[in-house]
Amino acid sequence: MNDFLNWDILATYAGALTMVGALTQLTKNIPFIKKIPTQLLSYFLSLLVLFPATLFVSGLDLRSSVLIFFNAAIVSLAANGGFNAIKKVITEKEK
Image (cartoon, rainbow, N blue to C red; front, side, top):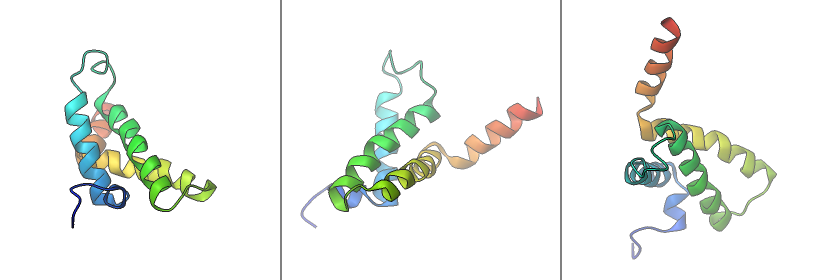
């Protein structure tokens, strides 16, 4: 492997998860971004990683474009600790 990071890696679950986790941690305390809920931020970052990765690796068509929105949700939940996010929603609904 000659590249530390490339589009093929970013197009995988592990690559997207690692990048979104790192970008979320790096950007969540920037003053104008701090107002955005972290889970929403990571979802947008997931989209920003998955769209170009898919475009450059396999090309975008309607089918893959729609799937990116669902895959971004999975990556975002994993990057935020999916269990903690689900637990928070359940706890809030119980109140």
